[in-house]
Image 1 (cartoon, helix red, strand yellow):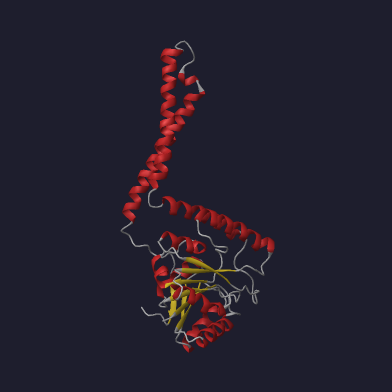
Image 2 (spheres, rainbow, N blue to C red):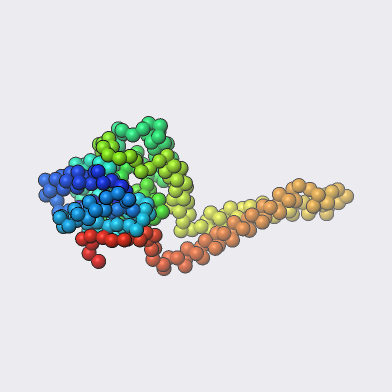
Length: 320
């Protein structure tokens, strides 16, 4: 199997037939052995009927249906779990990604040795205020925080070595940060290819402006996990010890000042410095304990297998 095309979708009934034929014509004309994996993320239209019918007519089409809408990350997780291709391509189902980019993406992974290649939609046909400007700010913050030099983290058109998608765990809403997850897992050769962005032909976007708010929150999460996820004591313990030592040092000074320097002055409990010191020592102790508990939880969780937080309702052409 040369290529697996993984396509998460939600209510895209108008585009599915056209998308399938576009992908199939492109891959067949280039002589690829391929499979197309559609993941229906809880559609309420006739999307499942369409991809189910395609899977009955074409053996290379595989279809997975979720019990309800679980999110794009979970859909990608399910598709990655069954993908067999040497190179795995992800793309959206709304016809805004061009399947004719696939052969070049495949060549970059297979022939040039890239672990992951991300598409870059330099010219976009989305709303400037609603999507383009927030996307530029988001991508700038993601580059600076993660150290991965990509222009477009949100581009759905990406290519991966099969080893990459079988190694990383895409959960929550971390689909935006798959390149960062891959880098953290040790896959260092990450490339970028400028791709064509198509105007949306049918329906409306399923993502609103709130996705960028969630994206920034996820960015903070993945920064923390990549920096301290395997050593929480280095963060919480260090800050806790520092705050405790500062508080303890000031407490000693207050004691010396009261006993020897100014014994007739105010009581220690009447000085505001006392309460600041007490707060610093308490917070320092709590932070240190948080780091200690984090280390215990981390060691206990290493032996546990991550279970996907989605439920598959039915599937077609999937080998158990």
